[in-house]
Length: 237
Ligand code: NAD
Ligand code: APR
Image (cartoon, rainbow, N blue to C red; front, side):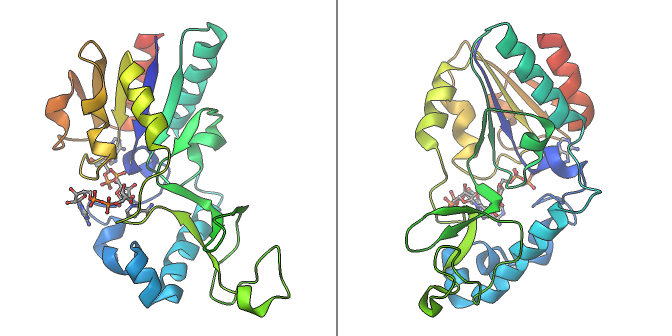
């Protein structure tokens, strides 16, 4: 049985990370076009760096830990692998590292990762936990003044192509079970993954409420991810 999981900001909400579009979400206090587009970065790189520096610092605070939903997915993956029961992949739109911290192995970060920085010239990736700014030296050429400020957050902005689309498409086509957890179903291509699954694939949505994508699912379970995810995975075991 091949299982494909899609997660969004909702799965990390109970870990203390604000979602984007809910009340008090990140897009309430920030203009998307200023902080999450290549044009915004070109206009005001310091503002964009500040936005992601804050997110990166917050993610390192000891209060922010994986919750029961992340943990249940990691445990399930381990059991699934031990039984050689088929493929198990988590595709996440989240740029946090909570799936990995919970112990999940097969995780594809389609919108990038906050704890990575990318060179705008070579696209080389660097593990990154500190702040970034226009005066940040290049790790491979710290003395080179011209290379200062050439690292950007390794996140996918609006207008950019998400990561791993081919692998996601293959996993969707092969999935026997597809579970979308805590995503608003508004942002494509993530919101369209459910449409790529085969007719016989069992499609389940876990969310606090209905989304524009709900109609495409066979089952919609309403409630908190920390409760609904462990319950569903126990049923599947
Ligand atoms: P897109 O043009 O495909 O837009 C996706 C959908 O989202 C559209 O239906 C659009 O109407 C809707 N949308 C756009 N802005 C919205 C907003 N502020 N609130 C609600 N709905 C909105 O998006 P794209 O330009 O192809 O984006 C590329 C990718 O970058 C997307 O997958 C996006 O999720 C991602 N992204 C990542 C970050 C991040 O911080 N990691 C931030 C922004 C975008
Ligand atoms: N349990 C389950 N679902 C929840 C919970 C919870 N505890 N808390 C919130 N939700 C649901 C909300 O009902 C909402 O539908 O999670 C969803 C979060 O939606 P968004 O904030 O829009 O986040 P997401 O779908 O991940 O956004 C997609 O948009 O801004 C870009 O790149 C960014 O990856 C992000 C993408």
